[in-house]
Image (cartoon, rainbow, N blue to C red; front, top):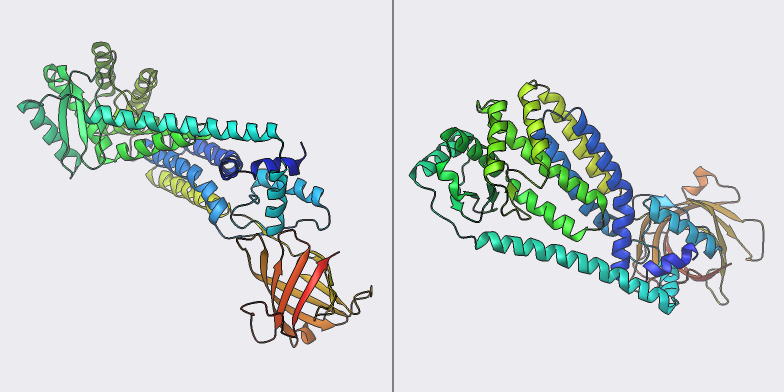
Length: 479
């Protein structure tokens, strides 16, 4: 299939256009941000897990923001669309889609591009329409299953049978909460259905421990409570739930799963760092994790919760990380450098989002006056910002040369493209001195098929509308 045919395929449905926006924006810029975060975490943020977690969270949020910025942000740059060559124009459109360019049929797409895609979409064969429906159905099914899993996990935790913590456990939990400076009240509970300690809840945090936790030695209980209370202090349940929501919707996007996994690992490592900073020896804490793992081999771990052991297979990496933190230079070492690295990464993520906008196409081509047009000039736009006027229209020698600037460009619901041009003209070759005395404000409308142009000019400001009865109104056809 030709690039134009693929554009018609993806432009034939709003869901397919949205999926194309996600793929094109996130697979390019999202993957770049993922690699940038990995480099930052590998070196400057290696001994700063809290900041590493913030970097991964910023990466996840950028994966959501990039397609939205592509669809809704105003244009920031210009990319030419070759006139008079629909096939090549569609080929360049396809390349721009993959490189971060225009999204057909949405946002600030030019009317001609949108019309070409819409017409191509209506001409799809039954096989491609079935393929489009299958792609839509597969994405919706995956998203619904992911969201259902998240909702069901939330329901299971909310309806979990719990036991009171007991006086000693409640007193120790209050002491740990005060030590870490957690201002919110935290409910500490025990449950027979809980195999591993975990934290849950956004408005009212809950720390759920195994039923046998009341029999644990005080040192083990304190280490566990320090770890879980660190999650509460950093509101990791909120970011963990957001990560689960994002991966449920973007289940087909590998960068989303990688960023979510790295975020959870950084959150666990950050909570471990808090435990070690409160005087717990790394060897003793690692031994505590092994003992809890042996005594509680399974249990309830659902999306949106912060389990002390994270996901399956994380225990070995956790212990290695704890021992590395215990031998490291300490949380305060390199703080200033890590802070600047994190700021630089967040700035890069923000710039990636705000520069991921649909491009502003150029006004190009040659336009001849229609029969009966009040404006007798033929216009040519040989390059961006340059224009030529010919009179009579059959002449090959321009009578005037000008420069223009696109003040605004937009598309209406009918698919027509509108321009506001600030133009300056000189008789003969362009001369800045004389052109400054011959300034025109022009409102242009180009039909969805890109072949007919209406224009309204004024010397006193931009016209608010097209007025066919005005002497400076004209109609032209593209040649």
